[in-house]
Image (cartoon, protein in one colour):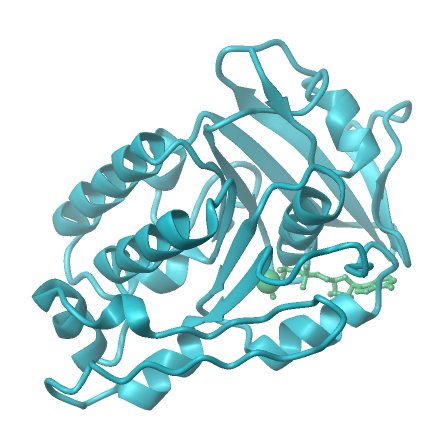
Length: 275
Ligand SMILES: Nc1ncnc2c1ncn2[C@@H]1O[C@H](COP(=O)(O)OP(=O)(O)OP(=O)(O)O)[C@@H](O)[C@H]1O
Ligand SMILES: [Mg+2]
């Protein structure tokens, strides 16, 4: 089985060599646990080391926020890149811009930031058609159909290999009932598999902590589930990471501590935490 390296050495060890290629991985954890950082490292490693074009779809964090976060880390070294390899799509902004508008989705805007081959595109071409997409955006929200339209556009234009959705919880807000949400989540899972993308989906952990997820259905579409934790241990917050499940493959099942440095996430694979 082909594997894709996340670029986080410790995590690649825990998964016995990387995540299974072209499968769906769920990254869950409480606020501030490092979910976005882990996923940024994943797409950055893809474009800088593996030459795999990546798309980071952000529904919560602004593009500026992501740029700011990236500039703090050393893995943000895109100089060897040809432009267009990493795309950050800020759907929160889009949602805000387009809320309440009807019809006029023909606008196309390309917004290239940063020189030196760092490329952040905001390209609305993919929104031209699709009534379901228009419906979702008119409501001021982004649902799974919008995500699919965006992904399809980039997959064909840029030969996409790695995809991050930050986060599923935001897309889930569009749906009124659990039944509809469940159906759409499953459909989305099928869509991702059909596109052969190595995907990371972010979801907040439910209040139950541990492995539970915001809507309680997300983990069914995931082949792999990575759980991040933030635990108060005698007055000090400890960050933890564990691979809770990994289809098709053996993996380390322990809970390990990690720290965040200028290199990003550094996992201590030798230390196990017991609670
Ligand atoms: N250089 C650094 N050194 C130490 N800690 C850092 C550094 N940079 C960021 N952090 C911490 O790492 C966290 C980053 O977490 P991140 O934004 O990835 O979390 P998240 O799980 O996506 O949170 P949310 O659910 O709020 O989106 C921040 O809370 C910050 O405290
Ligand atoms: Mg985040």
